[in-house]
Image (cartoon, rainbow, N blue to C red; front, top):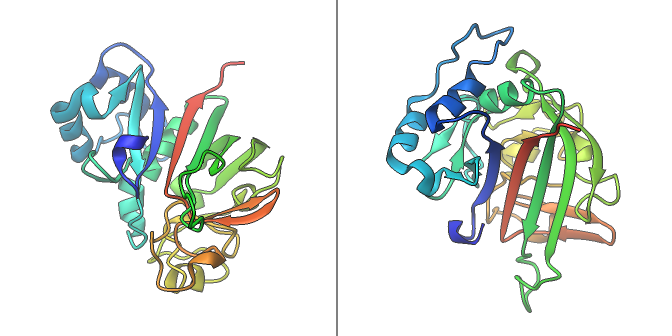
Amino acid sequence: MERYGLVSSLVIIPIITNGLVVKIISILTFQHNNHPPPYQIPEFILTLIKINGKKSLCSNGFLYYLYTSFWNKTWNEYKNGFGNGETNFWLGNELISLFTNSFEKVEMLIQIRGDRLDKVDPMASSNYWSGTFTFNLLPEYTDYTIQLSNATGNATGNGWDDFSYSNGWKFSTIDKINSPYPPCLTQFHMGGWWYNYCGFGSLNGQYNPPIAEDRGYGFSWSITEPTRIVNPVKSRITIREITN
């Protein structure tokens, strides 16, 4: 996580079979109601695979992709993915949905590192939070509705947290707002995310929003025990298949 810089956050997807390209294709060709196989793999992903190989995209059997602080990306950009693989990189909601629906159970791990509101030591060891969730992302015809359960960890408030508050809500972007309160995106610059109104934060929000940084706007997260708004230095999300 450290080598990606201050505004990056990292997502890891487990690889399935032997051979890098074969592994990725095996995920993307999953039979899906809206996409007869094979699914069209975005060209930028294939290019990154050819150029970077294991150096940037793979490690210990995992495929990496980066969340981004580009809060004003469009619906189609979040759907299809974007980025250069070196700093900010988004694999795409369509591929995430296909992946989660390939397995009976998928776990998401969120890790939050640092707090820019801590003016003494933003990267103090106490400024680290993590939470795990059972996770599924429904297809685009649901506007990528998120399903979350079984929250654990100190970023989750022992079962209730800002992300669980988004359970059952649709994905929103600046050009397709599903939130009942549009200013979450238009004024608070919270970026592409699953909003129950504004929820209590977003890991895709603007790094330095144009309004008060201590009110949960932009790139932020709310800790419930004890109550605290965090402006992360960086964050990381990983997902994997659970077999037991």
